[in-house]
Image (cartoon, rainbow, N blue to C red; front, side):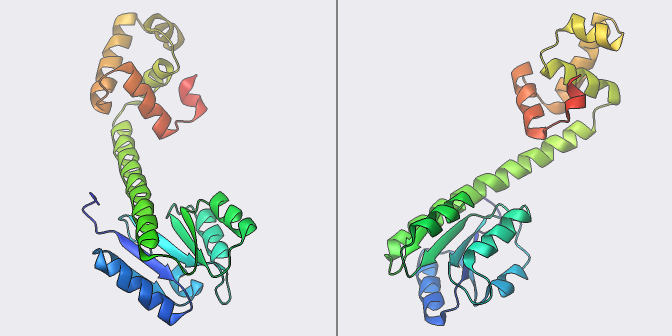
Length: 210
């Protein structure tokens, strides 16, 4: 993994032997792991800022693995999950995938299948961490713009030409060009197309595009 924060694999299974076996397998490839016997124990754990993934037994005491994933989704968590089960169940697998599961493994599964699924999940997690970091950086840059520069940016990324921006905001084309140059520099945008992609990532409210 490329993240400076070590990746963490969380294992939630009520069978102590199964938990221990999975931890042994994951540690052979140098992965940092944490194990939990119940869903409640895991949900009480504050998730790290670095990349992480979750291995969930479908059938857990008190709360099923799918219920755990549903709670995570509702809480806005994007941690990738790998579901494991002792019984092949197509409807369960379909529901798990709809909730964003990376893989659905049926016991007994090969060690390599588990490792492959975890590596895939952690790659997705790292991409998410990077995406969130990029968005945070964009928000910081956007916060440095003046109110007028934000108005100019909103009109520009909506496709309005310099003359049109000036007409809407009641300023000369030269003044618009000055504001555009400043906001491009502050946002570190190399082109208008790149500025447009930044606006999409920031999910600016529709008012910004008027």
